[in-house]
Length: 254
Image (cartoon, rainbow, N blue to C red):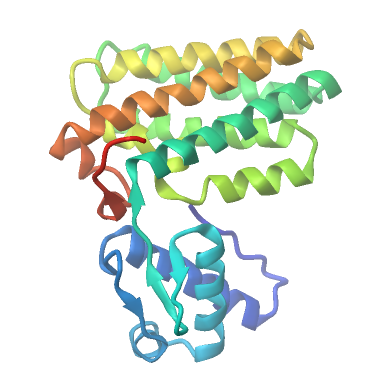
């Protein structure tokens, strides 16, 4: 959910990115409510930015799916049904499955494989503890995000990487979205152990050049997010830990 600033970028582009990040924070944090119309002039005062970067940031957030264009002009904060979230997770799982298959079929450099194995080793160390602490859980979140980023890089396709980045921009479609919602409870560690075994298995499949198996494993891996979604929606406490929870419109899956 973050964009990196290139020091070589021109000031106008950097200001647009900063404005986009701040607006996303306001939306995901619930300060801008679903259905509320975004007034450019109000944002000029709130963010201290000029209208041009604000307008560009609004367009980018519409492309991400957090805003929708209004018939008479302007934008409004979008809300999401449970079915929308389900579909967003499916899109990410499908794209990550494709990335894993391409990695297996095309081969991966020893450097990337070493990074992936280091990531898995670090997660193993965190999960070796019988119970999760806040520190170990935060460590898992960091390394889990790193693993998924490495998988995207392993595909060797800028096109796939761009589409994956786009798919992960929605807070609840990111690899760590519903991990945050399941950080407590007696089975919190067990869920992460299962996910870690899938991490290990997909790297093994990539090394063995088993494209179909690698793809199936990543598709299955995304199903953990579906399980976490259902669990989070049944618990108000868990739901409050989910970034973007205020954007969810409670409704049965279609």
